[in-house]
Length: 319
Image (cartoon, rainbow, N blue to C red; front, side, top):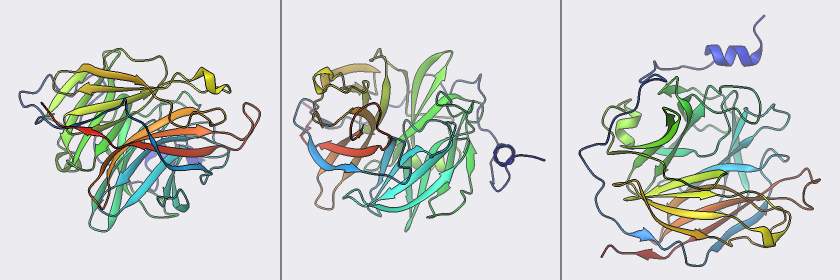
């Protein structure tokens, strides 16, 4: 008899589309088009709290990637499921105070470093990795999944770019774009598309395509806004004095690092660990760059995990 995990891998209960690119196929070379010049976040400015100390649906696992539906005003956060070997994920819907609104499970998915969302009318379609390459905490997705978020429902998944290596994505809710991050020839690359093209299955002509520049040893998330990609790296520490969390700004037209800054957002959290990034524009029109951090009550031995989200809101206009 097939196990539940085997059924999911085989497509039981999931409507999958055909692969659009294989593992040995690069998404494309550098595109002739470039992303229009845009403003950027001043990552050296102070961060502000959205919320702190919120427990997610899976109480014993840290938050990973998160994303905002800028049309329907929703926040989604992904994490590992309690009792999972490490690659079964839970997508939480939260209100902007960090309270749980709903949740949805996707088994055999990966790690959840970064996710995206696509508003379609009053619905929110989640974009995230799926078809993990293993069953433990080091497992990573090998395809992109797109599915409608339905509280407590079973995902009906379309799959793209199957056979990829360590694939994730992030969405720009203001400019309606999606960036795909995956290994190509053993090196992480980013490819940027319009969200409409991606939803239609068109990954043939990226707006830009570039290799990831050197960053810190522990990659923890990324976000895009306009011309720029922002990354978060660093590790978790019991001692707040050991902060090593960096935000980096990269020009997607060149692939070059423009700025890098040590962030002290949430510096007083216990066992603070950077986890995820996202962009959101408020109803009042303020665009914000969000940084996520996991925390605990008492450090290493504590089972419960908490979500904490902060933001930067100072933008610099192009010269």
